Image 1 (cartoon, rainbow, N blue to C red):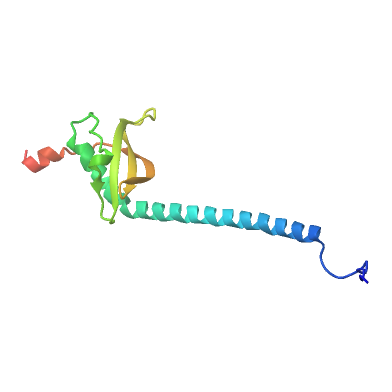
Image 2 (cartoon, rainbow, N blue to C red; image 1 turned 90 degrees about the horizontal axis):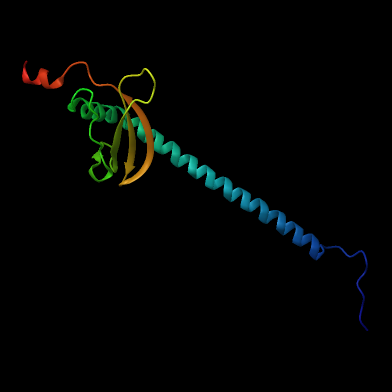
Length: 142
């Protein structure tokens, strides 16, 4: 003789288990997405910190590059293939120069790319002005 199950037996139905698994899977996907966002932000903060550490060096390189060109002329670009190495290991600098697009603002703008192991990691727009003192005349003793 087969015993029949009581109507009010304790336990979960298949539908309840399926719904619980769906909810857990949904939350797991959301949490993984949050981890990805956190890692992305952490990388951005690290790159920004490195940029701020080498910023004085970048400013000096750009200013020297600008001052070596003739007054009023755009200096030649620093392409990726000839990127200038920086003091932080693995980082280098590439840049292009443009006349300042801001109305009434004399000078130039450098589009700077911070490279890590040859790959661009940060792009920044930095304003520049040619020095008032001609370094060539000062060093020549004129």
